[in-house]
Image (cartoon, rainbow, N blue to C red):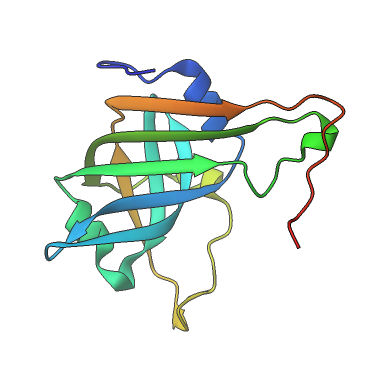
Length: 145
């Protein structure tokens, strides 16, 4: 469901259900995908990531893509459907207020063996899509052998 001005309310509600997603953009002409913690705040998505990789600097002022899903948390036998939300929009480095920092919760201790040093980005979603997979109550999720 594309949106030119405000993100789809259902997509933002789905994002609130999981704490982490994946940020994608390019750095030095190479694509990268990074795990980030997110919160939804005033129609924007705030991301917390490790500053040691420099990814936040590559994203600052650029259009990025971000996506999150419940693939690891959902269980079809409990009646939950699978969903994913993706969006693109411009990102900028920000300094969250204390209330927003509290919403992020505890930060990781380490990132790739280094002490975790947080960096924050605000992303303004411009194009939002969501996808869902529904299951019949008789279906069970089983891992392939």
